[in-house]
Length: 403
Image (cartoon, rainbow, N blue to C red; front, top):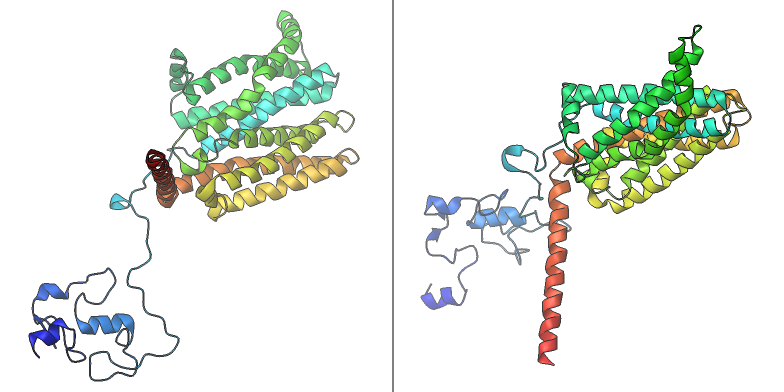
């Protein structure tokens, strides 16, 4: 065929337009490399026929060329490029996961119970409900003790907690939280010790008298710091770069406060008689409603990272928390004031639901840190929005200049 025929694209069917390629494939071995990942050969007509399943466009009913067979009706072309996968260098996560273990969600859960129980104990003290007051104060003391033990276990050495008291850094949730616990702990312990001393068969003279005198001021002091104890752990989580925690920074503190109220109210229902458990029931129902409502809003505002709350182990824990919390709140509202057994079962359900909330949120954060998609996709979306805003601003400026 003449050069003019090649220029006009009128070469015979199946013959390569490039004179460097013959009918048997490329002369140069390098030409046979894959041009697209997952494709079967970069430049040969045979590879193109395989990728298009029948010779490409216009190959239907055509013969004499490679891959010129008739293409089946309804058969779509094979994908030229495989689906995008999100990976990172050497398979490592984009964001380093928090080096926390199971002791930390236990610390979060017990801290919430301590804060809510201190508030409940102060209210019971001021409203003359001695059994509820005793149960709440002792529960708060036991819960904060377990919480601190879990925190120290994660830190590795007790002196690390003391070392954090050397400075006060308002921009650090860890530093602020350390000082909150330091301010909250003494009043909580004194109020709880006073209640425990009253249960003992013997008195300790002046020490017992001092405890009786200091119980109310100590309990009220602990109640002042109780909301911060219940909520600061959420700020501690959201201040990290972990996607599922950071994206929930607006709502997670309110979720934790609602969860703490539901758990402490449920514990009060479990330990106090029906005649004194009215404040505990009201606190539990209000906390459960707040937790469920704000958690729903949180999942809608988180964006892509909310998927971590719906799949795998975190998804099971979050679903269990919603069911248990809703069941416990319903039982407390309808039957908690009538049946001691119903009140106890509702209290157990609320405690279990609060625990599932804390553990579920913790596990979701760890899962989101391991998947680079939760970091890369939101970053690209923010970049696209910023570029679009800059382009719109530039276009508007240019339009104003032309006027």
